[in-house]
Image (cartoon, rainbow, N blue to C red; front, side, top):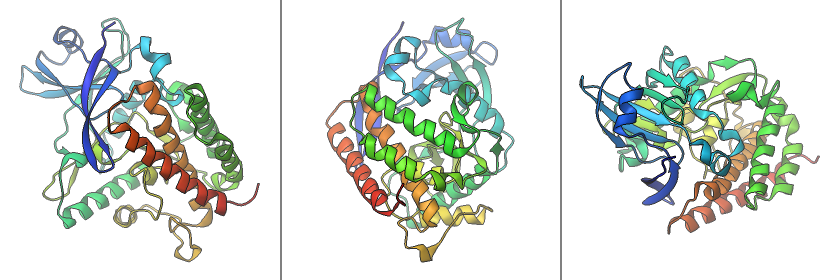
Length: 362
């Protein structure tokens, strides 16, 4: 088993910081030569930094093309490093790339090759084309017009994704093992899995209050009857754009995609937001034909109807729970970690205080 320590950029409290991580599995040039034989001859490879999960490499081919090779977490790390919802994510991403290839208005990479045989290397491998553009989180300060354009473009992409629907709810891996026939059943399973992960890693996520809010939000969750395809992780680091114009030219990291409430995408793009949905994202979403349960007269933190506001609070708490727990199995370290966890816990507490005060009694 090969282990590699990877330098990556981490965005915390507005600062970009170098972080050392373990458990990612880049491939050697010899391994790449074997894997990529059906599509080309690799000349060189470079690790693409910025992620905290899979290893991602850009590979230059002899014919002049550049491809992206992504590998799963090695089995030896499986029980040590994966949260419950993170199993078999490479297959999910491959399926998502295949699904989205022909979808107009969703700039995803073409899937070129997949290898889940583990006969050549001990990890799953997917290979895609290289998308142009700069990750939004590394593009520097954009002009106000470019920032607004980028946000509207992401909103438009959300709308097009949400037009794709499924017959089951939840994470599609392993036949929707973490899912269900209804959204309330699926989300109950998802949040309880996060709580179980927190217990396993001895992380205080205020589980009793979290589960109480889950029970109190059951009726709000039941309002979701369409299983929309949700990217679920389209924060600025997963958005590629032209910094000058703000035009979005690509979206990446579809491995955490699921079928559920469209509002999840408005949470995943900014986990530290405790207030209203981003106006420019909403504008782009509505312009692309999406619909939202907006209700300015409701007096909610999000500007949504009371039931939708409850769901957003639950989704924020769910994501913040994951962010608190994942630091342990990932082996996060460095001076950035304390402030990051403090901000995450503080945001969680603010959302939870609001939810405890506004959710209907059980």
